[in-house]
Image (cartoon, rainbow, N blue to C red; front, top):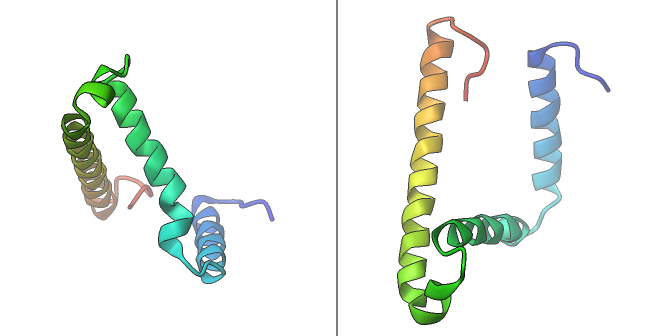
Length: 95
């Protein structure tokens, strides 16, 4: 079912998402591997040689939490900017 335009692609993506989540009993469990992977990525960025993980795991977790918050805030800012552009007629990338 190849999409011909952005609106059709978006509709197909929403349809697929609704089907996927409609068949998933535990959404939290289904998305846990992704959350775990993102936190591991942040931990590698903070502590590439693994010293904090062994000497101060609580400090590493605090820093990972901060990077995760910054990541989510960045996504929120980008979505807000995209909505503003779409409302101004500047594109079809509304979030």
